[in-house]
Each structure stands twice: as structure tokens, then as C-alpha cells.
Amino acid sequence: MSADDRPRLLGAAVDRVLAETLREVAADVTEGTVADYIPELADADREAFGVTIASVLGRSYGAGDADAPFTIQSASKPFVYAFACEELGADAVHERVGVEPSGEPFNAISLDERGRPENPFINAGAIVTTSLVPAADADERFRRIRDALSRFAGRELDLDDDVHRSEAETGHRNRALAGLALAAGSLATDDVDAATDPYFRQCALRVTTADLALMGATLANGGVHPITRDRVIGERAARDTLSVMATCGMYDRSGAWAFRVGMPAKSGVGGGIVAVRPGEFGVGVYSPPLDEAGNSARGVAMLEALSDRFGLHMFDHIVEPVSPVAEVDVDAAAGTVTFDLRGELDFIAAEQIVHDVGRVLEHTDARVVRLDFGDVTVVAGIAEQLLGETAAAAEAAGIEVHAVGAPDRVLEQFGLADRR
Ligand SMILES: NC(=O)CC[C@H](N)C(=O)O
Image 1 (cartoon, rainbow, N blue to C red):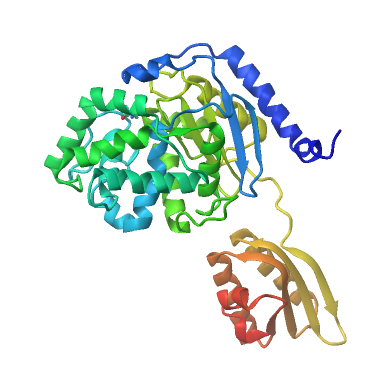
Image 2 (cartoon, rainbow, N blue to C red):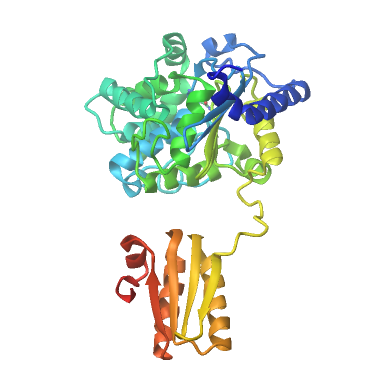
């Protein structure tokens, strides 16, 4: 083994599981039809099949045709939506497009009672979202979208001219959807082409599963690219995007997807799917044959298998979280009790702390409680309230509460800055 092989070897276990799962899925899933309503897509290699997982720490794991290029198609939509939310604020975006799963195919004629497409991930809503990106004309709009998507990927994405031309020549239904949105007052320009032209080009941007995985990892990481460290969007826009991906990402299979896979995701007719494990990683999968809903058949099966194998469903039960109280130290002579706290303090952690403090106070006559935050990483809003109110109640009962060992930021967070 050369020194150069060593870093690679450290991730080999994940690469191996990915390769094995890919092989099993390829053997099990043989149905699906390559999209041909955009003529140029019909030439895709049916057997191409690849996967990449990119973690928020910047490491990537892959198998199969992980680096094969394909057009991003509808997997561009969450990133353009995120960009529009970042530029305009989510409220302005939702003046013109909703956030309801449509229960309909990707190319459905969709307008709600307010004249808005149901969500930004079906074509009608995606075209409206593209039209919202502030720009003087179609060229500038596309340039801004390409720049934004390139920042999500961490490299300059290029356009597949043939696929773009092919869709521009045949995309009459999308032009009609843009026309309906214009008539209903939801398109942000009065020139249909100024919306559909950049939309067709955004769909024809070329990516690999490695790009999709990093784009997903940027969302997983609250909007910061794991490798370039570029803050592409704010945390709120990242959260908003993941919310819509969780409910609307897989068209009229969004319910079955949430049930079986349980990860925010978005598919494209080029055969790509991007999925996200918030806080942890992004996944990119590629296989051109599509199921009846227009989602990559093997891609869906691959993510189902990974979700099962790695326990990735967002509602999987975390059995026993470690106790937020690492140690309790009673100094009877001094009349103090010190609680060494650790980790991420969410509601349950705060509940545990309050419970432990109460029990210790019942069994000692300590008059001073010291909460040591030295090893605490985050205090969630709800934990902040619970601990703050407990501290106030304890003081009312004649027990002093001191917060120690925490950065000021954490102390201020729950009103203990003056209790040191
Ligand atoms: N589902 C998709 O990927 C559709 C994208 C494609 N460019 C279209 O508008 O038809």
C-alpha cells in the first residue's frame, strides 16, 4: 500500500457497501423507460448506474458510474427555488407559487385557487420560480442561475447544447404552462420566453452524481458548501428548500417516497435523483430508465435500499440518546451541586437535566446549583426556555443557579449570562 492509497482506504467500507447495493439493485430492477419526449434524452445509456454520497465534512464515497455526466433536468428545481428564496425572501416567492404536493405528474396543468402553481417542483411552478430570479433578460437570468447552481456544486457547470436545443424545439407544453401562469398573474415576467428559455437551459446543465451529492450536501450543511466553504444560501432558505423536497420532491410519488425512503429528495427525467440527510450528507444517484411517475426506477430502488441498510429514514427512532448530564458532583461541605452537561441540548435533554436537578435537590440540602456548559454544543430554543424558567423557579425557592464553562453566546441564549 502506498501512502497515497491510505486516505482512500479509510472510506473503502462505504464505497464497498455502495458498490454491493448498486449490483443488487441492478439485478433486481430491470424495468423503466428512458425519457424520449425530449428527443435528445432518448440516446442515454440505459445501463449507466452510479451513486455518490458527499458528507458535510467534505468527504465523498461513490460506486459505479459516479462520474458519468447527464443533464440535471428537474433536479435543478430545488436549487433555483433556494436561490430565489435567498434573493427575494420566501414570502415573495410564495406570492406566486404554493408549497402543496400536487399529487399530479410533473407536467400537470396546475394552478391553485389563487392562480399559483401548486409547488415549485412541478414544471409549472419551476418555470414561475425561474421567472422570479431578478434579471434584465433571459440571458442574464440563466447566467445568474448557472452561477448559483455552480456554487452549490463547487465547480463551474456547463450546458449540454444538444439537450437544450432539443427541449427548446419541442417544449411546447412548458411554454403553454408558462402562458397559463402569465394569464393567472403568477409569472414574474410578461414575456413567456424570458421564463422558459432560462428554464430549458437550467434543465440542460450537465452534472455527475458527485455534483448532485455535493449540491445536496450544501443543503444538508445549512447552505455552506462542504469543500469550498462558500455560503451559497442562508440557513432559512436551506430549511425551506428541504421542507418542500420532503413533501413535493417526487411528484405524485412523494407520499410513497416519504413512507419508504424518508429523505428530502428531487428527481429529474435525465435519470438523476438528489437526496439529503439533513446535517449529515447529500446523495446523488443516476440511472436513465424512469418509472411511470418519471423518477429513475433504479435510482428510487437504490435510495430505498440505502435508507433501509443505513437507517436513513427521517423518522427512524433513535433508541437511547446519551444522557446530557455527564456527571453530578455534590460538595456537601460547600452546599453546591455541579452538573456537567454535554452535547446538543434539545427538549428531551433539557427535560432530563431539569429532572436530575430536581432529584438531587430533593436528596441534599445544597443551596447552589452549578450547570457546567463546557461540553455543550448547541442549546435549542425550547431547551433554553425550559432551563431558563427552571433557573428562575429555583431562585424563587432560594436556590442559586450558576451557569459556568459556556461561551457567552450559549449563556446569552437562555438568559444565564448574568448568572455566572
Ligand atoms: N421532470 C423533469 O425532469 C422535467 C424537466 C424537463 N426539462 C421538462 O421540463 O419537461
